[in-house]
Length: 373
Image (tube, rainbow, N blue to C red; front, side, top):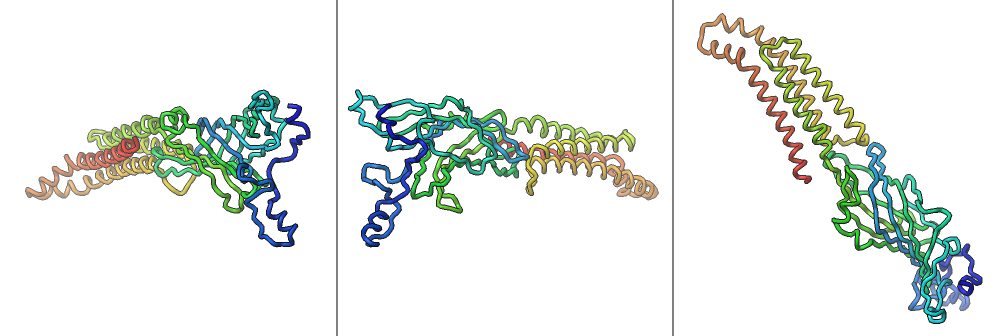
């Protein structure tokens, strides 16, 4: 420890900011062109640039706030970088290959998150440890709770899948100075591990990593991408199935032959209020986007079916009052059959048509559920 940190300054980064050929160019009066790919002190065995690696070995989905398009995650990340000033010959020190020291003793890179609402480091702020091996590789682990911006596509709600991106960068250091790497722990790169990373409403179905270039500069982005799929069971049992049952019973109630007109209207208007309330509940769960979600279309269709049932009931009453007296005055076979149809079967026919439309609407949403499963 005494030899390793003798003259070491943890306020100075180990990132090379001057290239070898720039120095040669200056000495030999512009004989060579500038090449920023080779840092000062470059050799075939040393890294061409400062290397910084983000190693993700666990991620847990905490919550998804749809109206705010915000996803909260807990990440377990290992960080690794090289500091050549902290390298030593292990054989000269009884084969010691690793040291564990307080992080405040060594220079540590500043990691910034990109497109993130907030990020909290869950480590003990007063007791952070890093490991240093004899090659100068510094390693530490961190637990982060972060809320990321994740634009949601709710067109297939509640059978939707969303892809969210977590991005990190090292500010101030351009791409020709710093090289970022991302890695995934083998234990989480499979579907059996993803099943433990979701929550009651969302399932994790994919996890990938890559390095990208920042769109408006020569900086790299360490990128981890997760894909989550909503579990629709809550909405099937709490919205779709009850609304179908209520709609079915309401249509039957609206077309009951022995009920008076006001009772029929009360049944229809109560169902309209119920569907409107369900729409309000659903609207609080999704962002205010331009697309109408699938569940919203289902509820709106049910609403229009009920409105149509009420309108048809009123219209049928008017038809009976106008046509039946005229048909009774006529003494013909067709007039008699038409009178029977209007008086006995018109309500039933309209009820069957609307119930069929309601069933089709219900089985369409169930079909999406089966296809999504």
